[in-house]
Structures are given as C-alpha cells and as structure tokens.
Image (cartoon, rainbow, N blue to C red; front, side, top):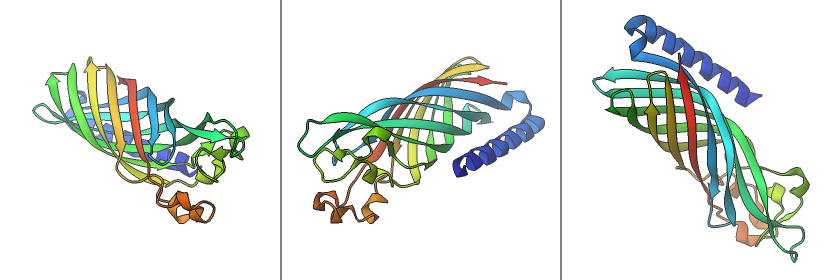
Length: 223
C-alpha cells in the first residue's frame, strides 16, 4: 500500500509538471508518455550463488527539451524483479535455484543529449528505488541457503530504500520510442540484513554485500 501511494503521488506530480510545461512552451518541448519494459538481472553478490532472471517495469515518463540538443527525462515506474539464489531442502541435499522476488517504485531523473534529432539519444542519471522485501517462493521459505545455515526467509529484510545510477539509449520517432537501459545499485542492498543478527545463526553471514544489476528493454508512447 505504501509503494502504491508513492507511485500515485509521483505520477500525479509528473502529470502536473508535464501539463504546466506544455502550457508554457508548447507540445514539442515536453512530452508525457506511458512506458513498459522487460527487465533482466537481479542482485549480484559474491556471498551467494545468484542468477539473473526476468521481470517487468511500467509507468509514466516525461521527455523535455531544455537547451539545443539537451533533454531531461523524469518519470516514475512500478517494477518487479526476480533473483535466483541456490537453496537446499536440507543442509546435505542437492542444491537448486529458487526465485526471490521484490516489487517497488522507481523515480528517475535523467539528463541526455540528442544524437540524431528525435530519432536517437543517450540519457543517464540517478534512480531512487523504494522496494518490498526480497520474498522467496512460498514453498521454499524454509529451505536452506546454499553454503549457509540460513533459511530462505532469513534474506527477506533487504534495504527498502536504494539508490541506483542508470544509462539509457532511446531510439525511434517523435511519438514512439524504444529504449534500452542498464541500472547499477550504488548502495549495498543487503545492508539491512547485516543488522538482523544473521551472524548469530551463521558466523559466515556477517557483512553480506549485494548490488542491483538490471538491464531493461522497453517501449514508450508519448501523447
């Protein structure tokens, strides 16, 4: 519910800014769009055997011309990404991968430059991420994490507010563009886990470290 409130609040703010800019400068300077994409990636960590997986992202975005060929893109997206982590039914059984899912809201602010008019541009900037717990598939909650005396549910309490940086390429036409993006998590998404006392269950679980790595391909329609 909290993530929904953040998404709706940011969406209303973006719509208001877009309408105001269009009223002041005209449609060619500020375009409000709806976008959706498929993500591939997850949490990268040397502490666990992790695997990349697919998810999705969808939301609102605004593309504004600021000076010559320079642009600003700001938006809000709801997303879901999945990370595969090796687990075992018992500490001595064979390992297999299980999906750990998190959902949330991302708010981005990118600066960019048009390379070929409205047809090709490059953008980059910060992303504020507000996310849920890292939830394992329900049937695997009590399985053990490979290499640890920890259960899958012990990894749920990841950091809820994270900061990423992203690079983005947009290609297409004035009203429809395809975009390709890569995000890297600057902060340790497992930092909250390090205050959960997991080292009392397994001394190897001290100072866990992980960073988001997420590639996304999507489409945006402007109106």
